[in-house]
Amino acid sequence: MESFVLLHPVLQALIGTLFTWGMTAAGSGMVYVSKEPGQKTLDVMLGFAAGVMIAASYWSLLAPAIEMSEEMGIPGWLPAAIGFLAGGGALRLVDRYLPHLHLGLPTSEAEGVHTRWKRTTLLVLAITLHNIPEGLAVGVGFGAVAYGLPSASLAGAVALALGIGIQNFPEGMAVSLPLRREGLSQGKSFMYGQLSGVVEPIAGVIGAAIVGISRPILPYALAFAAGAMIFVVVEEVIPESQQSGNGDLATMGVMLGFTVMMILDVALG
Picture (tube, rainbow, N blue to C red):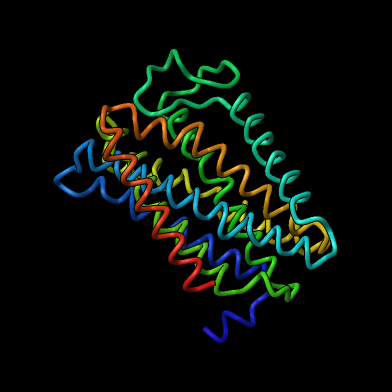
């Protein structure tokens, strides 16, 4: 652990997001398990993932952004509000133009610009959208530690990476298992599932590097990541967890995920 503390924040972010990617791959590996989890289990897991992302958006991102702003002599609400709305707006643009397809929908209902890409590619891109703000959040979290502000701690950044990694497990399953049901081989289903998480180390390194350029950017970057995650949760994760008629169970998953992430952040951060 001591050697990890001494690493450059960008390297810490890379290691943290490699872990979250690994958890995505572990979830995708469930395609090799003989007994596939039922739809109720998958919906609860998606709800759990949504709960983790909601809690992380506040406890690990928005709250520190507000505290950092006040420490810098800026009204606490200003960077948080601007960054939050900018993050949601940026993901809205990506959602509008990037071709992707939500799970359980026919190819004719693919979103983004029209394309002739395969259905499997569109499904993977939908989950990849989830992972962009997650990787960015982890990267910004580690990058914030470099400034030594009281509101930014290495333990908090690690807790965020741990929470995102935990919820990436069901997300990996949510990609690979439906692909397997659509007729792909186990190998291809696993490959596409883990591939959806490749963007996290990339986004994590970019996030850590950006906040390393200038300290005043930091609260805006934290809030930006929070806004992007909330957009993904409301636009994609929660609707997917509710579409199979297991709304009550999925909602309890959200509550559980929120509680777990809150405990991780408060206890470790």
